Length: 113
Length: 118
Image (cartoon, rainbow over all chains, first blue to last red):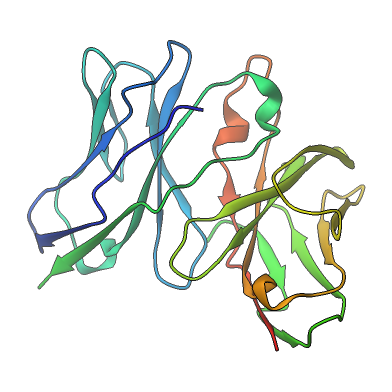
């Protein structure tokens, strides 16, 4: 799986959009970008994933650059409950998933009131 | 809520002891993965079970072992506990494997078991 790089922490004001960047310059053609988050004292939670097109669901939007070397997770109207560690994971669909998800240290997003 | 449950929530053991942690998968999921999360770190993959067989393993020694049952619930066993085994242990369930599905990458995590080894 390709390596990802994320800032260790970010602040965002409540009600504003939170934009979390992720670099994955070694991503290969069949690898997807996944985002998970982990709220304190809970297990990680799946947010969204994409290949090359932008994706949106009820939780967030995922913007992937045209060269696919970076992406941004957008929480459109951040609330205090969005304070969490956000993990960007790059992964293909070959190999059976037998090596599990590779989590880095993620970005600790703090939503300020 | 993901529908994945783990027991116990907290556990204290002493060095050298053995421990068994349990996980019930989300309904309809046939794959379970176990992760270890040390304080301040991201989860690290221990192993995965698919239809009662170990399907893959991370960089963990053989004293970490597991089982998956016909109802797809699972156990993680750790023998000869060491102080560094103190961590949050997470299980995650998913459906399917590679070969036309990405659903195994959408893993549903339980709340974890906090293990403290003294």
